[in-house]
Length: 301
Ligand code: NAI
Image (cartoon, rainbow, N blue to C red; front, top):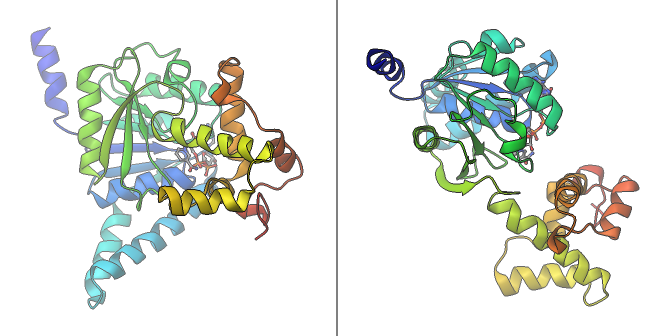
């Protein structure tokens, strides 16, 4: 068995082949930064249209990067775009796409049942040493990976939107994630230019765990009539140095997304006061006022 485990490690010294499943907002960004780091990428989506859209959004995003890097050199710009795009293959077939993967990153819809189904397919088709990860924002890894046979190679890679711009990557370990897996995920993160932080499998990890309850606390302050939304936003920008106030941030993220995250946590931890829902937020979302994307949320746009 020594020979076998030796050859297993000999197969992969580092992550070279990355399969990203889900070609939406996050998946296309993750594919882009991976390709930009010269890794081989397969980008997978069940929807052919999403793959087409991802391809063109990645292309225009790399063009912007290339223009900044090589302002006076059109040839160098073209080369960078062609090289990066050339690293990304697309597919609608999960099984085929993960066969050769060193690392699988799941970035599909935030739905526990659909994610579980996908991970069963991935584990079935991937090599035994393939790292399997999720980009979930609000679900517990323990719940998503519940049916995995080997949980030691499963962990979280939580990127931030927009992926090519945001420097942070939260690397998440649940109780069974091995040190080897965790270290390899950190190495991957560094290889794609991110600053990594480590976090356990706790709701919201670091950033969302602090940010989402903060936003709801601002809502409670406003709902009690203690201060106006506008003044709370001004106060947090000028008094705490935040680039956006909590209501501006909520409109930017999307009030439906904020509600979805908080409802999920509240259901799981009904006695946690930091996770209690907001009547004002619920009313706005019910009325279709979901923030910037709908033209109105806390503010009108
Ligand atoms: P999105 O809606 O833009 O993209 C999801 C994609 O997954 C769609 O193209 C859809 O066709 C595809 N998909 C759905 N089910 C699939 C399946 N079974 N197999 C293959 N493809 C499938 O979603 P977004 O915003 O990119 O989010 C993806 C994940 O990333 C979620 O888990 C979310 O919580 C997480 N996340 C989102 C952030 C954000 O700011 N939007 C930030 C960090 C994480």
